[in-house]
Amino acid sequence: MKVSSGHWYAVLSSRELSQRPVGTTRFGDRLVFWRDGDGKAVCFDDRCPHRGAALSQGRLRDGTLACPYHGFRYDASGRCVEVPAEGTWHIPEHFRAVTRHVEEKHDFVWLWRGPEIAAEELPPVPQFPVPGGTIYGEYIQHWPTHYTRCIEGVIDHSHLPFVHRKSLGIFIRNPLTRIKVDPFDGGFRSNMLRDDRVMHHVDFVYPNVWIQNLSDRWTMSATFAPIDDTTTAVYNRWHHKIRVPLLRSLVNLWGRFSVFLVFHEDMAILATQRPANTDAATADKLVPSDAAQVEFRKMRGQYQKEFEDVAKQMVSTDRPRSASKAG
Ligand code: FES
Ligand SMILES: [Fe+2]
Image (cartoon, rainbow, N blue to C red; front, side, top):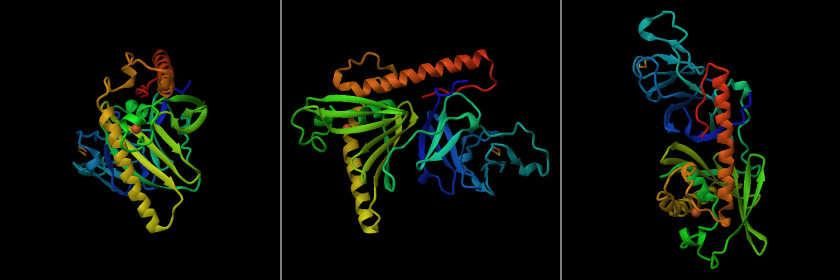
């Protein structure tokens, strides 16, 4: 069975997941994230199998998640381990919360989207290539569009003198844009050239991470967690090596301010794009300076085709578990 058609998506910052369950929507589904007794991240559909209450309103107890309605408790595997009103009653095996595959790495919780396969068969989560030894500050925003438009927006160079004419693009006098795309394993680098020299570059790691390495001490990243078809949670991070507390606070202030300023300019435009999902944007008339967007759409199309092939294969071999849409 080929499994590359599925993907891990970074969907939650590790900093958001502490001692309480976190209820949130990803890919249009209500989910609850929590940590078991070993601190391992767990994800369920945010619905108690008893009578449908939101488990995210419940409490963590002895490494289990307790529903707020009648106190049924679920362990990390989703199994119901206590039904308080029934005492020592034997709990049927099918009393289970719906579990999702999650992994925690690079200070993100990653959610698997794709064929429903055993945990041991899953591929590793994507790389997150920021310089070693850096720490980061973080600012979370909600952008009012589909995550594909968000990603195409941050790998775009030719919008700088227009959308950011009062900020980043203030000194760009010449809008002429030449792009060179260099694919790498799991993503690509988009280089902006001037007179054949690389002026700057950004990296995209499939499926939802953008990274701009400015030096070996300073990197920006933005990770696009799909909430639903028209909203995306964006995890902006600035990675650096400044450990002096006062300086670090100043850097964090600067980070929040600059991200707020620059990305609000982007958001205002991205929210107007129709259709919101680039998968449906077949009428877009792309030009050579859209080379990064072309590469993004190509990768997406290729992965989606692979996904459909695997889904068909699963139906024809009558596998018992279904597949969730890859993206
Ligand atoms: S709805 Fe959750 S215990 Fe009853
Ligand atoms: Fe922008």
